[in-house]
Length: 72
Image (cartoon, rainbow, N blue to C red; front, side):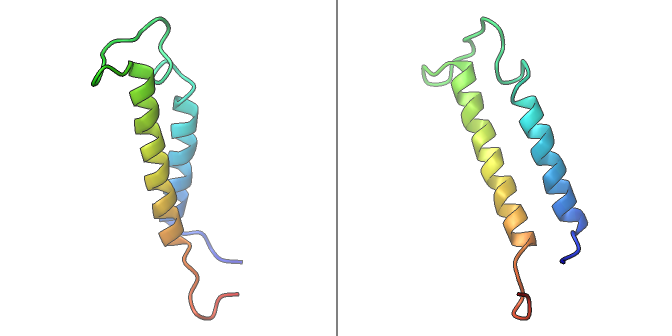
């Protein structure tokens, strides 16, 4: 079994924090549609920002978990 590095632990922690915060008023505010960005409500463009952050975290985690030539 491969030992997890501190970088992987950090990406896992950030993923959990991002997931928890996506269900708070940060992403889903009650009755708020402003500010708008190019006519798109707040909730939609914050959802896009969260998705981009998930993709960036997944990329960093995949680079940390790359297998070497002798790994099975």
